[in-house]
Length: 240
Image (tube, rainbow, N blue to C red; front, side, top):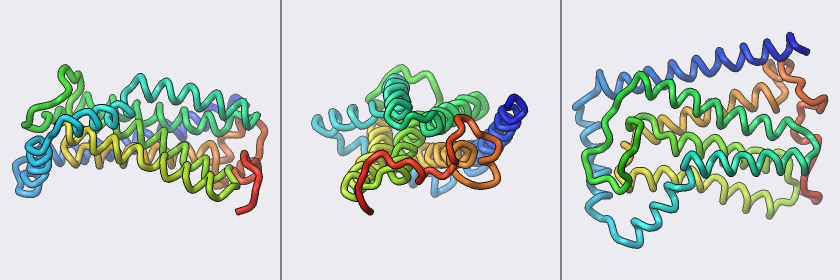
């Protein structure tokens, strides 16, 4: 058991390191190689246009949308969802999947922040005192890992079609709303949120490959004695 856990940790660490190198490479290209290029100037125009078209109702809506990716909101939601999954499904695997995806992207995000110091967009920001640099978007990456990961669990485990469709639609909308909110509020460039989607998506694939899915990584993580096939334990009864 200890050997299996050690191998799992090693595989996850290696894959997260590759994710970090990818994000680092993209960040260095944006800040060192392509700095001042025309397409990055066009990217700045997006922030400028959004800033020029701000209204009080949109400011309030963007505050709510952006807040869905706040650290406190993500951690609180993750704790609630992880506990609820463990109690409802009587297995740890889905909860561990979410925890690994969210914590993995956070670790990569923090490491990239130390190496890539990209300035925020040159527009008036609606949020002051942001301690990190612009690249990548931590809010968007965290929302991607948590809410897209939750949508994957719904797709795998829930059988009632209308529940599955409605839940997945709402969950997938959250990372998009967070990204739009961050752009609107002048916190990030477009490529910052796109890089965050990449980070969150890769960490979801790592977590799914190690914790949930059948495949070459699944054998490293027999964590609770359950079968690795996620379709083996539906949460909601019904037909497809």
